Image (cartoon, rainbow, N blue to C red; front, side, top):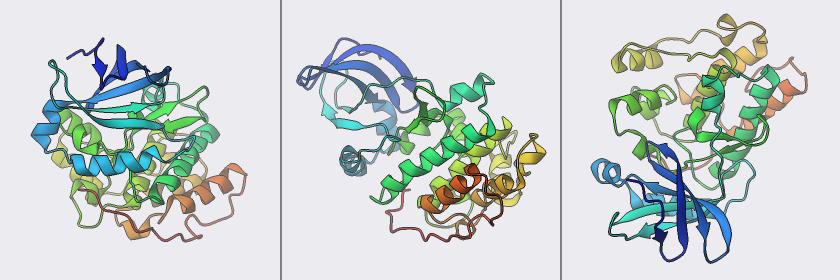
Length: 299
């Protein structure tokens, strides 16, 4: 339903629907109190009810995110519930104004960045994740569509924290999300879902940017899940030319089935990515061990 023109909570005016996602619609908006442009996301009410959306957790996460100021994270300005005759019991998120050129668009348009830019994108996301992981928040749905490209490909912003529950509304959406999920998140292996789960997703993302392909694919969801839990991925260098062996090792470490064998923190991964960007190839990925923090697990 297009809600263009309504006023949310006597403050946020929805000017134009500019983007639709599995979790809801995004509008260009205006904050009548502060006299500033904003973006407003209205969550899909049907999915929220059908999937049993955890509003209490959402409220907690949005409250924490509102206090985080990081150039690599879309700034959350407000959130809450609203009532409208067209849309009773609505839930909204207000953010800084957004443009919707994403890494997904970049990959789909065959405009893959150079190797150093690809690594820089992941390094920037690592920096953003450090700040959220320290606050006990994991993203849980890192994929190319949730990474917004700013004025150049190496400046990126991570969006859609806390909304992974609303990306599973259809078989197609489930399958699209599964390819970026770690085995412990998809349920093919037992284990906690924590910051290392986000790092696995970063591995899939980096793999796809470098090669233009996914590490695992399948004709069915069952086949895909089996490969994720039981098969080893090809090194990226077997899918694309010009990839240094140490970068192969970084990606394959991120894609380890067992979280204990992956990077243990975004800080540890970021250290290795910066060494690579500095031209230092004489190291073993993960040798600077960084233990995971104490995070709330997600379902």
